[in-house]
Amino acid sequence: MAWKTLDDIDLAGKIVLTRVDINVPMDDGRVTDATRIERIVPTVKDILAKGGKPVLLAHFGRPKGKPVPEMSLRHVVPALDDELGLSVTFVERPDRESLDALPEGSVVLVENTRFTSMETDNDPRMAQFLASLGDVYCNDAFSAAHRAHASTEGVAHLLPACAGRLMQAELTALEVALGNPARPVVAVVGGAKVSTKLDLLGNLIEKVDMLVIGGGMANTFLAAQGIDVAASLCEHDLGDTAREILAKAKTTGCEVILPSDVVVAKEFAANAKSSTVPANAVPAGTMILDAGPNSVARVKEAIDKAKTLIWNGPLGAFEIEPFDTATNAAAEHAAARSASGELISVAGGGDTVAALNRAGAADRFTYISTAGGAFLEWMEGKTLPGVAALEQG
Ligand code: 3PG
Ligand code: MG
Image (cartoon, rainbow, N blue to C red; front, side):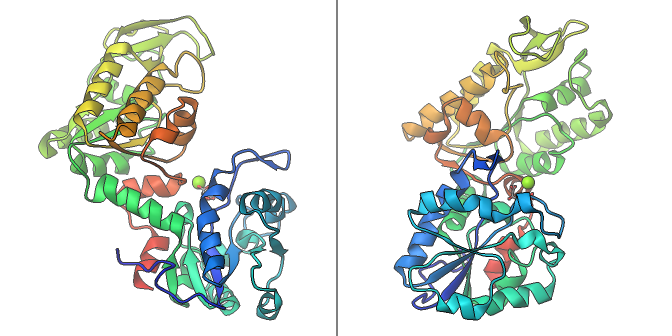
């Protein structure tokens, strides 16, 4: 790998500016899922163990360049204290002198970097200011690495820079899944809309051996092949694009697996009366809400053949029962094969982790990314500015 790690730079007595992503979901002032906080703990502890002083930089929400009290990182401090097992010093306006004055062993959290638009503009003055606060820059925020902001990109060029432990783990897992994977590779891509995943599908059909398309976006592919999807969610205007993707898959030798049978209902509601029909016989007035059992069997077969699996997006309307059936069954199958060492499985992006958690499958996957948008952009084959800056730095 072309980037340095915490092992490559002497941290003793240094202030280590550490970009983390603790953009966690909150409800009523309480963190409802602390996963992203848990995952930065090894980096913070490692910096402390090496005699460095971690000064954490992070964003929270999208305050649009102004202080917004509800988006203060102050609200995340109790959860951060819990996960780290120490008391974090929260600083609204950091200056070098005060940071130097804090005793060894201190961990500092700086207020939301997005309280000024200089952050999102990647203004060189902001990057300079951040650099003046520390001696070393460590980026542990893979899930924000698709943003070229002052704290994720600009500052990386101004100090000795390295990847934190989570960044390292994310990049290593992604390299294993798509960079240089054990073959065959199967990708499972689901979710509502094709329009958000065109680049991703285009990149995957060049890289993977089998591509399972599920969720609402599969309907667009079925319709593109002349199938009447009745009242289903479908981007009818993307027919040409869908046909192009299928044609390109033929030339790259990527086998595309679309649903052969589907679960339909008249309404999108929990426990709505549903039936299973062939994908080319969707009754008028009904909508496709999940893949059927024959489709699931084909997905499982693909997973059985594969040595590597990359998963993004649910196969059906997983939020409501019983339309989580296909997602749960395929996820369980992948989890079991991963647990027995037959499969390397990597999942991430948007709803994916929620769907796999719901299926009770997430902990047996080989790797679960903390990233949403960054995971998608990486699957699209794009260069992530936060990662690229580390490679040069
Ligand atoms: C995320 O939650 O996906 C990351 O923290 C990035 O946030 P953003 O989409 O607001 O840049
Ligand atoms: Mg996002």
